[in-house]
Length: 251
Ligand SMILES: [Zn+2]
Image (cartoon, rainbow, N blue to C red; front, side):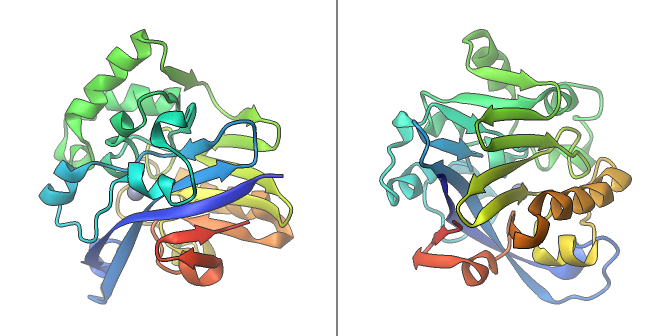
């Protein structure tokens, strides 16, 4: 059976009015930044790569630790990871790809098309981009290190990705069968529990209807065991078992 870990590598402070869709309150809001790791199969499977210290410096991030270091806290060497499922190509999920030099990156076709297509150059979208690492996609693809998926896919027995879109054009979420039930790694289909539980969108969107539909998909996939792991919520450490600072065992 698989084990799933949420590994925190950074934090950032903002306000609710800067983040939630049409929210007028100026309440403080802290985002935690995670990569997720699935153990228990023949080889570890990583979900997202985080970012490197250049983005940490440029974007006012605090308590940054390299994602390559946080995976070592559960006994995995970054260079031993053969597959990284990339939920989407925002800097905080993709810009750290070179920390995992032997991984094949599984990403949705709609996501690759978007960031190499006509809308990416607008400020409304490109503030979430680390441009050199998006250009790397082409080089990595020709090196047979990118698997471009045309929709939902079984990654391994008991591990699946689902394309939901909404927050980005080809956002995918991940489910993992565990002894506690099906874990749903929502990534930024639901940054906070407030999103999925109250159907509250965020401000960074490619399709608002897809974002709302994704909330329903998350609930349907999670079923009654409700093992929902949201993308940036400090509450992940409270709702699941924090085994040491920044290391949360989901199942
Ligand atoms: Zn994110």
